[in-house]
Length: 536
Image 1: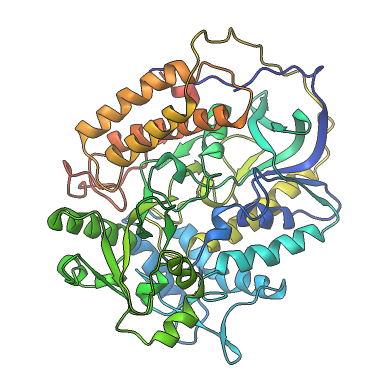
Image 2: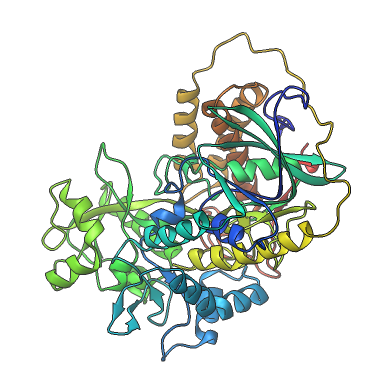
């Protein structure tokens, strides 16, 4: 990448900003971050930073459910095999096996904390989604699983005395000293900048879907944690693998809303503008093929029919069961005069989940000492080249717990060096020309959707790289004073890494589809990683 990424976004001096001390700092308040905070022993102090309020995270928007070996007819080996197959040869089998074997324990933990999963009698109501060979998806309130899980977990966090939560707080940068993470520089509208010093820091900031024009992600998902870790010197891996959810509500002028994969699990069909059910033309598994296959098939069918979307059709299913199973989606579609029991739902793919991220080991440790990562911001090896549906909430729980417990154990060790440090970043000369940040952001999102979307090729990726390098030269050098500028800078850093990785992988694998390299490479499968100290 030709434009150097600055180490810190803003100027600061330790004598001019307040200081705060915590044993463990958790950056991010989705499921992974909250579960990590609950893994810290009660004699240690924990500070959790939420960029918005606790309701705004990808976790809270998860509709379908959480996967686990919960049914009498299921086996750990089957869940492992389904995950490995969906991951396109890039999954770490040790990670997959350990996560799957913890699934029942972690879901049981949620139930003990008050999560009300849907049931059939005394047993959990389990459904199936694409890529799964068994009914193993636990869900809540029909299609509001994430919201219910976050309600229960957030309630437990609030009741835990050693955990403090700062909402509406932006993490500007991780603080590093002598090659280790020492906390973070944060900002909120009430107090401005604060230096938060921590013995151990856990990154759980979620994904980067907002770098795309079409996305299921909330406004907060701007790749902040990816950029923070990169600027701090941690390794990032597999950044070419952005998963595109096949079915996003597509109505001109409206926000994009996720239409859960569970609809296809319950028997919904994908049809084109002519009513043709096309998925069997692309894959023998039909609508229950993994997400990368379904997204690619939808885009191909849209091109064949010269139409901007396809349709999800539930009209052949029992209307009462459809409304009981998907009350949230039914209400959403009613706002657009659609009755999901009678009308086809217009859908197309949208950016959904960052499969790559900050490299971690089995405990959630990153390559930067004293920094841990969990959830969507991390690359654990579970998902490989394409995430299996409903494995994300499970990963957040497993690695959130591991990172919290591991960070707590390290923080509990005697550390006579734990103190505020003499770290500063000088101001730079402000740019003379004003920047239209909204215009750059919109241009970035459109470029990424057009050139780094469901299908890519060298020509489009080169064009994207040239544009990103040009924008980065004059945007990354600035020091902004509010989140609008900082988010844009983080989005640019994340997008550059995604483009560089996509250019490097000369093959089609999982959710990375290169039309100029349509087949898998022969031989060993490679991972491509990036660090700031290797930046040209």
